[in-house]
Image (cartoon, rainbow, N blue to C red; front, side, top):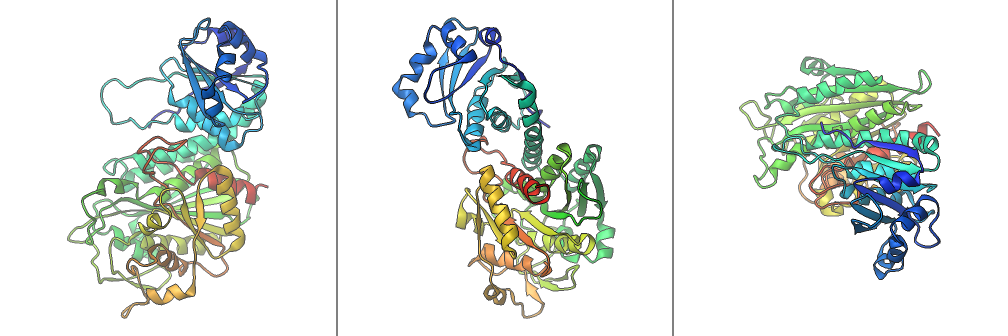
Amino acid sequence: MPAPIEIHFHASDAAAAQAATGRLALLVAGEGRLSGVAARVDRAAKGAVGRARESAAWDKLKAGEAMELAFPAGLAAEALQLVKLPARASVAEARKAGAAIAKGLGEAGATVVAGAHPRAAEVSLGLALRAYDFALYKTGDKPARGAVRFLVDAPERIAAEAAPLAAVAEGVLYTRDLVNEPANVLTTYDFAARLAAMQELGLSVEILEEEDLEKLGMRALLGVGQGSASPSKVVVVEWKGGPKGEAPLALVGKGVCFDSGGISLKPAEGMQEMTMDMGGAGVVAGVMRTLALRKARANVVGLVGLVENMPDGRAQRPGDVVRSMKGDTIEVINTDAEGRLVLADVLWYAQERFRPRGMINLATLTGAIVVALGHENAGVFSNDDRLCGALLKAAAAEGEGAWRMPLSPAYDAILKSHIADMRNSCGRPAGAITAAQFLKRFVRDETPWCHIDIAGVALPATEQALVGSKCASGWGVMTLNRLVRDLLEG
């Protein structure tokens, strides 16, 4: 997998800044006099920084944006980047500043003069996220990028602040790697093996094979994968960092490693992007990795249902009836509405085995949520106002768009089947809502629950501040990590 960019923190040193090669970036407030190393750099550059700050171009910059001076006189750097970042900048603005620095990284790396800026650690997180590049399968010479060093007034303190953020970055990038992998590489075997490898971080990992799932009665999940050569699996990943015996928060992810639609075959155009249909499971994996890396003081269990939805002589047919682990029967109207079948069994299993204090599932579940919310917000459905409110608050704090959508008994009537307890697909009207209403049938009344439909945010259509174009976003890792911190560790 692509290696993350190296970031180091060193004491502020004017001589080191003047001698730095590659890119030299200064975090500069919008107004006020330059001081410390930044002032020394300006003098060495014969006042170039001051002149730039007096220009109309500087006035037009927003917090977190940058302007660049090529081959500045008096400095060894090939480029001097001035990053506008007030001392009272928000977390989002600081991360945006880091992303601005990351965009132009070259083989010589970069030196960031941050001095006493209170948001230096957040700048480093934005830099790490935007520097990500999934070029694993490109042949030929790949442009190398050097390390980044931050010159700060209190390197030990800033490094300590940055350590948990580095764990977050690794979780996000791990999720991006999983979502970006092609389906011939990230099979159900490979996905399960990667999760098993996280045992070295202190996580416990258990892989349930098809015979185990058959004994448990997970016929809804098994029906989805029966047309694939890759066997279906459920992987359970536990982090026990909280009080012994305390009920965990359960995170459940849809892991359809490739979704052809099955017998209800998808159109050819755009089908190549269905390698990302395991995005919910990818987020769960990234969150669990982050929690282990930062030694979270919480009990959290992640469960992912890994399947591949393929057309085959053995594949599930429209009109089939399957029995879920809960015991309810489901008429399969559309084999492309497979994610809810996978989640139905895993949600029920999570409750039966772990009796969680709360449960959150993530899935690239419906195209309907993209129609409703575009690529700016994930759709959130919940049976519990407190859990939902905490989730939305965490998402807002991390700058990850999320919007609550309705649930209502009125939608239950649409799920009725004439031959089974329910049907898995109800047509286009309110498609995201009826999918969520379906899942709610597999959630106990006493279990606080949120369903997050990430179909529009897992693989953004355009470049974003912290995400390159046509790159998985890792949406949700930062939100759920913060939620764990706020709810379970606060």
